[in-house]
Length: 377
Ligand code: BGC
Image 1 (cartoon, rainbow, N blue to C red):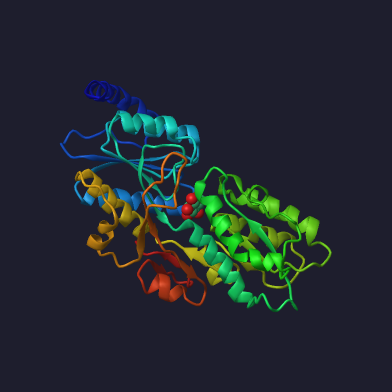
Image 2: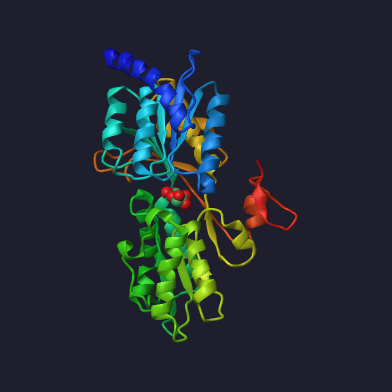
């Protein structure tokens, strides 16, 4: 192990130049005696990952650690390389929001061999026994809340079959472990109403693989939905709701509805994240809001405990005294190699009606002159 560390130290020195030269995103490890946290984020193209990365970096630095932060442009190979570099740089802790839940096995085996603890951030990393903890929102619950929203909004009642609604689904990236949890949470919640014929899916696309959106890409979601509208709704059939797993996909569906839907009813559109302007405009009906600052807060406290040589468990929640809810779960997230102990936060439903209370009054956002929320930090 020691020899490996020395070798990797040498490798790190050699790599410093190539790294800073090629990606420009990592600074060389400082030789100041402080411990270093390596953070691997997926992409800068979605606002949330920029927020998460910046917040994690700042808070770890405030707590006295050095931080090396990488973004991998949603490219799996790039993220593997970035993590290899962090390992070679001898970081003391790795925090990874993975692009592909199944492609990290080898690189994280190296981390484990080097004694570097790993926290899977937001997305579970599969097929690896190197993952020490998982910090995320309750992903299944995100989907359940979307499904329940549809039920409540339409006032669905299993005993009343006099009215039916047409609904479609759009899910996320098959490579992202979260995506099936979001979809299953929503689908399972709505299934009794689908089985009863109260909800109908004219496209018949109800399996995750049929409704998934590679890389959560907005344009891909749009094209698929234009096809759905063209094939199923062109003859005046009314579309009542689309359950979209996140806001990037909801945006694509919205674009398709704007351009290709002939009906004039307001389509109920779910999402999750931060299409807040679309919520204010009434174009997207709801979003499941995940306060990533809170998610980062939990990851930081778990990370600090690990770096202090502790073995965090449910007690961490008691000690931390956070002003948001978080549960410790040792049963749900089996990654194929182990059940990963998880800290799961609870998201909130945000609509036009409670946006002020949930996001502005809480200080997460400010309203700009036009009345749209903008980041308060
Ligand atoms: C995250 C979502 C995000 C999506 C696309 C998911 O794993 O949980 O918050 O919208 O990835 O980046």
